[in-house]
Structure formats: structure tokens, C-alpha cells
Amino acid sequence: MSNKSNQHGYIVGDNKKTNKKNNVINKLNLNDSGQLFIISAPSGTGKTTTVKQLLSFDNIEVSVSHTTRPPRAQEMDGKEYHFVDVDTFEDMIEKNLFFEYAKVFGSYYGTAKKKVEQMLFDKLDVILEIDYQGALQVMDKFPEAISIYMLPPSPEAQKERLNKRNQDADYVIANRLQQAAKEVSYYKYFDYLIVNDRFEKAVDEIKSIVTSYRLQRKRQEVLYRNIIQNFDSGINI
Image (cartoon, rainbow, N blue to C red; front, side, top):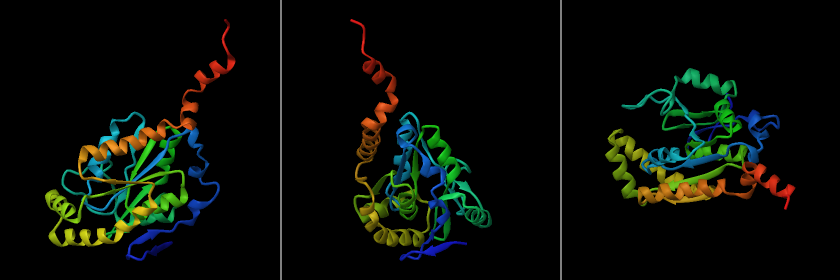
């Protein structure tokens, strides 16, 4: 299996097959397909809650990742994650089925390529809510992706949010806080930086990024090509 550990001890996907020129995702014409948005953040930032608000947009979907960690209370297979065992996940790695994958806090997480490619071809914008390691892999393979990094307003606020979630033991929270202090430095590789000090503001800022992209001329001239062609043809006066 082609894995490697990064400087923080994570296992990170190193699937060189995905960089081949015939990779489907590299053939996309983004002027006439969906756009890929990456959203990453340390644990306790409010990333998942924020991402859910983006579904109020038309033609946008959140990619559901695969993971080997056990489901938490109220989580459903196929909704929050596709929950699989380690053997299944590693078999998917060997078959080159992941767009990106990484091992975080002892569990695998990964984004399956086929579903993302299909959504993009169907002209849906796709949100990848993934760890920074996976985000860096996607940026390398798909430079056109728009990447957003979210920060909590302070380490104290992050700790408070993790405690309020009531999902993890104290030692797990301590580990997440310690890791966050290391991974925050990777914000500089992202296109946008959002501080989630007020939830509504953070949601509005991310929505403005999506809207701004959608209003770019290269997107609009594809969407409204018929209108533009009518003007190019002129009118009878």
C-alpha cells in the first residue's frame, strides 16, 4: 500500500495514479461543470454546522466521506459518513478509489473519486468537508478547487465548543487541542481564511465566496450563452 507519514505522524494518501493525465477529474472543463469547494478546520471550529447552511444554495452538494471510525450517537451511515471497516477502506486504497485519504486520530478518512466526479459532471458544485491533509492532496491534484480554512476565535473557545459537544472523553479533547495547535499553521495554503467568532457571520462570509465564484464572467457567459448570442446576432429595427 502506498502510504506515507507526514511530519505530525498522520498517514497521508500518496496515490500517484491519480495524477495521470487521463484522470477523469483532470479532464473537467470547469467553465461548463460544477466547482469544487474545500472547507477545512480544526476540531471544534463549527465546520460541519456551517457547511450544512450552504445547502440552502441551489445546485450544491456536500460529498459524504468514508471513515473507519465508529458512528457517534445520531449519526447515520451514508448521511454523515460512509462507515466501513479497515479492510474495506484499505481495499479501496489499493483499487485507487479515493480522491484523497488520510489517517487522523487513529481512523481513516477519505473521499471517493467516482461520486465527486459524477456530481461535477452533472454541473453540481461540490463541497469537500475534509481534514487539512486531504485538502492539500486535493489542491495538488485539482488546483482549480477553491479552498477555505476556518478558525475558532481562540483556543479557549475551541475547548469550550469541544466540551459542549459532549462526544469525546477528556483525553481525546486534549489530543484534539494539541493537534490543532500544530495544524493551524497550514491555513496559509488555503485561498480564504474565515474566523468563526459569530456563526451567522461565518456562514455569510462563506456564502459570499460561493456567490462571488458563481458570478465570475467565465461562469456567467456559459450559463447565459443564449442571451449573449442573441445580442451578437443583433436585432431587426
